[in-house]
Image (cartoon, rainbow, N blue to C red; front, side, top):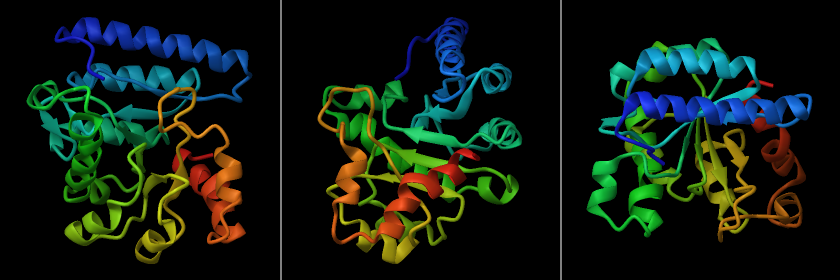
Length: 232
């Protein structure tokens, strides 16, 4: 969610947030990692903060589906993506209110239009850009927006998922999507520790109890695929 129009203040707020989570990560001896937040309107400051966050426990960097007034495929953002790839950190696009102009068009209390839909906008923008070609080690994740939209957009951009990962939820038709993109791009999103309707407190059990998913596929979603996404 956007914080303030003042870029310097936003940078300070996000730096404090990352510092707090870094301290939490240290307290768990690195068992719990975090996704860093950056003031993406200031590319130099974002790169500097990402480098710092990577040293204190960040496992990824989180962006919204739009970077304020820019699409994620805008080439002015490529230096930041290059820095993330160099640090072996995936760029994870999460639902949220990342574009004040878009939020103003819709009722911000209705998540779909102003928070969830931008994730698909980010997917389309990035995969139709030259980011994956120009930055060979770049990994992308699209989180907490389900996976049911993926077949349509994959056909629209006419590309393989490759280094792109997407979260799926326990009640989705995962096998149908897997027929198009394979089993290697799914990860799970529990929405922990949120208390909203999308939380999955028994996420692991819910997936393992599904009879239509093979144990091998579930293991990929629980372990193998996240390891590749986060570079572990």
